Amino acid sequence: MAWTEHQHSLLQALGLRVWTPPVAEAGSLAPAPAEPPRVAAAATPSAAVPAAAPTVAPTAAPTAAPVALPSAARGALGTLGWPELREAVAACRACSLCEKRTQTVFGVGHEQAPWMVVGEAPGEQEDREGEPFVGAAGQLLDRMLAALQLTRVADGDARPEQRVYIANTLKCRPPGNRNPQPDELAKCEPFLVRQIELVKPRLILAMGRFAVQALLRSDEPIGKLRGRVHRYQGVPLVVTYHPAYLLRNLPEKAKAWDDLCLAAEVFERAS
Ligand code: URA
Image 1 (tube, rainbow, N blue to C red):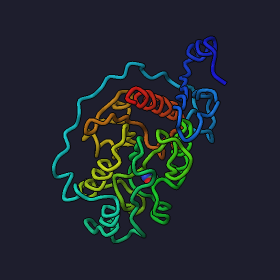
Image 2: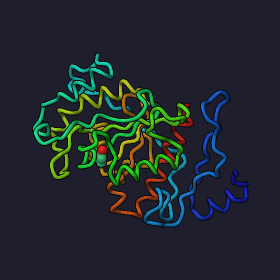
Image 3: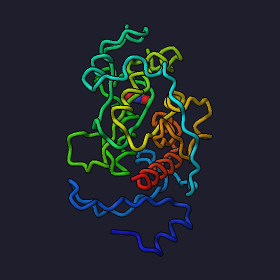
Image 4: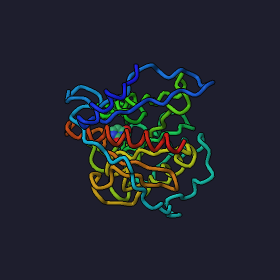
């Protein structure tokens, strides 16, 4: 079912942002589901991202200047392919986080996904399972992605444009889930840089302070950086709140929904 023009006007008058799933191209793997567009709905703590009464994000998103990549961030990894990079991460002992980890947490998703999500660091569950975002924050992230018909499942029947690759700024769990330290971020950064180079995403979603610091070299709060399009190495980048923060601050989910809608618009425009 599609929204009528009248329904659109009503939703807009209520300040509800509408996201319309793109129509599947001929020859794509799966048909576009015949679902109504997503609307940020009334607050329900257990609901997916569209939770509280949403604010309407600016339709014209100003674009920030590209960020130059410091050569130190690339290190010696610039020629590694996926298997070698995975091995390098698993063998890494560059900082003290290696001493307490159960295992490294590399990344998950399709290796050529057009969407890339960058988070912070593995937590307890991720450290145990070896996959990013599998705890409560990860479940919220999956619901957020599902609201845009996106998935981390690499070998499912998703259309290519629905695929997401997820990686963290740190590949090892900081003990007790403390914040990543600057030296840990600096040592781990070349892995993320190489992952982005290999994935070649068409859009990056930076979730939370540490992803933003790593990718945009900015200490500005998320609230100041969201709502516009940044660039990382020429790739459009949208900033949003970290899902763990959203779990503690439910009203901010509406803003995160706006950020996702902005990301989807930018992605569509760039396609
Ligand atoms: N938070 C993150 O940023 N990454 C994870 O993998 C899990 C929680």
